[in-house]
Image (cartoon, rainbow, N blue to C red):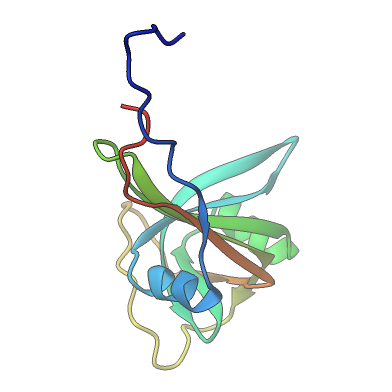
Length: 143
């Protein structure tokens, strides 16, 4: 509750919708995202490194839940974000699509170095059926 002697600050910044080209630009410049997919009785959410290749998200993986979801052709969502906790700014890009497996590493593919240990010699891709993004621009917010 605001006291009578306080001066009201500026309104919080509006959320901006990002254009599709800007969403793709952010995807090309980001190394880690989160993939959400069906797994048993609840959605699974995993951080992954990825590359944007031929209009799809490509993830290097090994045997496990991501590969199994790709083999089943499950629907999935993928998200990247960036934020500044001091300035209260940030952006988020979200993709929905369908998972699939790749028999071979895509030709001309930028190599993905696995971050986790273990054998990671399989590739899963996520089609980009929908692509959207938002940004909270720089502003004073409600400090």
